[in-house]
Length: 167
Image (cartoon, rainbow, N blue to C red; front, side, top):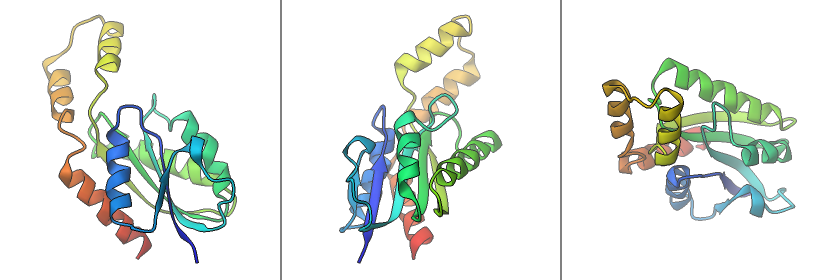
């Protein structure tokens, strides 16, 4: 008998919130990080990869663990500061998830879930400085909208997505 494996990469805690919400809905799941991943993964399936948008890619620890998931059913869950419903965001999620699963021979992508997360204040300041230091009202509005995510509804939707992918 196998049990679910949830692997989380979280820089600011946003993605960890989503991973914990899914883990709370799966009493027998193991929630871990890439660094603490068990060596023997034969007792785990399906797998959830929980990651954040790192400069338009999955973070390095998530990319490094993906090849170890050969033959598994994988669902990808991600957070980003931008609008998760925007076409560009959805394309990023599709491309990134497909690349992660393709790195694991014989693995299958069961589904994807993308939600908004708070933007790291240091990153926002750095990006603003690179753009000349001025923040447009539109950009500030997007930053403020992201401050409240992931919220309880995002967490509930992530847990529901897992059930949809694997039940």
